[in-house]
Length: 384
Image 1 (cartoon, rainbow, N blue to C red):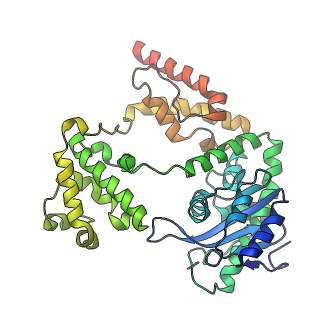
Image 2 (image 1 turned 45 degrees about the horizontal axis):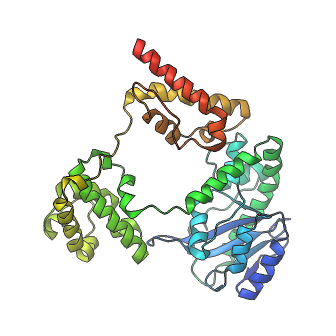
Image 3 (image 1 turned 45 degrees about the vertical axis):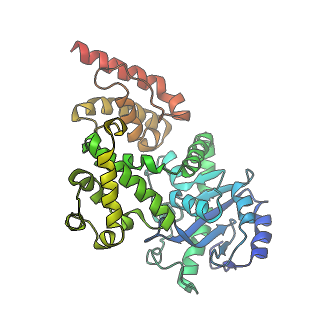
């Protein structure tokens, strides 16, 4: 059935949502999508929630609904598979909107990679490849908080879940036939678990790309700045970079300006930041300067040297061989961050150990093989 055969139903009353959720709880799966706005806020603002039952689309208005408990019951029902595509941001939407996350979860982007299609495949391309339907692209970035929503927006949103359900009906049997269902659901369960983990503000400095360049005394200042930025972004519901741009954080920690004028002269320092929070930033720098050495953070690990590439390539081949044998996209079977974490356990001379990042079915499938290869590589290097 196409989206034109049954008009999407708009749900904007709590009682209607409860009634429909009761019906959806009887289904084997629902296709789920969200439209949201997140331009200047820390948290995404839901503009529309779409549910597809395999026959038609339902559009839930989050600006009108006040009781989300029926949807929570649906999202958390172990009997109903929730089908989403590249759902990282959707998970944030649900967590902020109603405190719940979809489980069990079937991510069609992940499923496509498991079946040997391109890694990280966009939704439009997947729909085109499987359904031979070309999706419009001009509505995606429109204002989903406006009311009334345009007919074009409503049709686009409805089509999303109609097509998503059709894609699922094609992918799920293939995943099952390949014996990959358990692995896929294990990966999506990890995605859901990770979505619940909020970065600790005191650890936020680890996420700053150039932090490894800083000395411990400078890291002490960076840690305070990042801790403050993370707390304030959440408290004010303001995007981190609108509050204080990431590009200014390391220069702040290195140059340590002591006046508003010096602060304003930093590259990428927004005048609004100086005006609104300049004095606080200067005070944080002074606090960092005053910290005793025993309270300085340890140095952040440097990127792996170019010499480590030989070992990385050797280990990557293990993943590629398994991927080829299983008909999967190689990027999905052994991710770069896992390989790098493993190399860090023993580089350059070993012995190596399996990193905590290598988990579940991947660890079981090739953990011992990777470990033996890494330690054999180390032994060769020492005897060369």
